[in-house]
Image 1 (cartoon, rainbow, N blue to C red):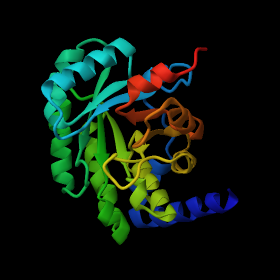
Image 2: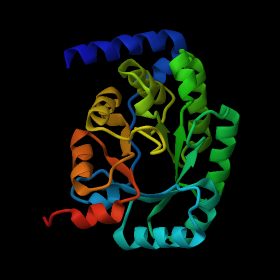
Image 3: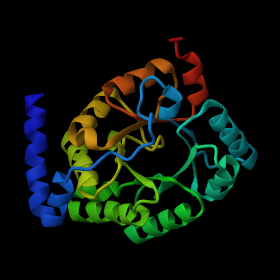
Length: 260
């Protein structure tokens, strides 16, 4: 892994020069990863799962069932589209299960002002976590300042009100691009990096999760999402370094978990 270490450091230096003093301070600062106590514990699998329903044809009845299941099983959050945030927040109440929503989803191609406004409204409606999609095309075009400002706009909107997870859509990125995307999220002060939307050509892999954990260190969360449909896959992602899982198969996964 020496080669990867050297590559990460090389890219970090390049981005530090490009982004300037502000980015450098964000990258080097010491900060505590903001999570609920126990949410990253391998001994409580349900608390690592964002119980997810992002289909365009999801009905209000399905959202109600999703929230009831999340309360019954003690999942970390439900992850729903922005139009369902207010309903989910009302249904979950003081249960301790958070409402997570998606921003700029699933393409990431809206402007940073639109993403910031979408995040603001979602938080006002009760979202405690926002999963934003980066501008993938801008990253692949080498416009790193644009990607940084895109992420930073949502991070600053969320401030201390909500966790910010940055979806980098790994299936479209080469290794160096994955490193740059994770470092840009770290520079911008995000709380998590996340593998996938689940709407791309592929989802999470253990190798990508391991790489992302290596890049961001212990000061950020890593969320694996996309294609996690059984306990064996979930366990592999956790072993690779994920401390949150996004899946629509949460019930199946926790029910498959072997007894302690």
